[in-house]
Image 1 (cartoon, rainbow, N blue to C red):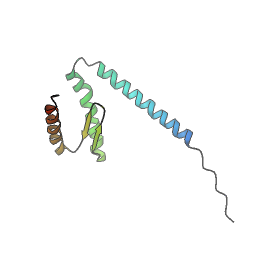
Image 2: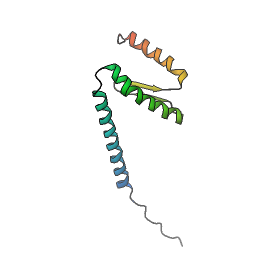
Image 3: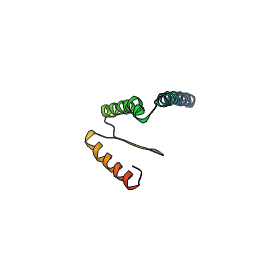
Image 4: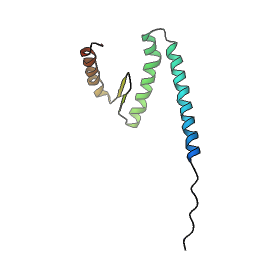
Amino acid sequence: MSTPKKPRPNNNAAHKEKKQTSRKVADVLIGDLQKQMEACPNAETLNSQVITPFIQSLVNVCDARGYVLNIYGDHCNLAITPEDHSESLFQLIEGYLDDADLG
């Protein structure tokens, strides 16, 4: 005679709450970054005060975890690779932008 199995708890509510919390955290981060970016009067300040520190943090995490990222967006691409690949990718992108008369 087998013992009846206990019913599994419904984790849908917990999953939904976790997803909503994650979304709220992301929205706060987006808002904070946008405020910092908007406070920058020019591209140089934007680069030095927001973009470079953000990218350096991303690189630090990727390096520590062994990640290689190639992120594609509607208007951007971001590649995080080991150091020895960055120059080659830069040259490829620069060549493409020149050929497309965008550089």
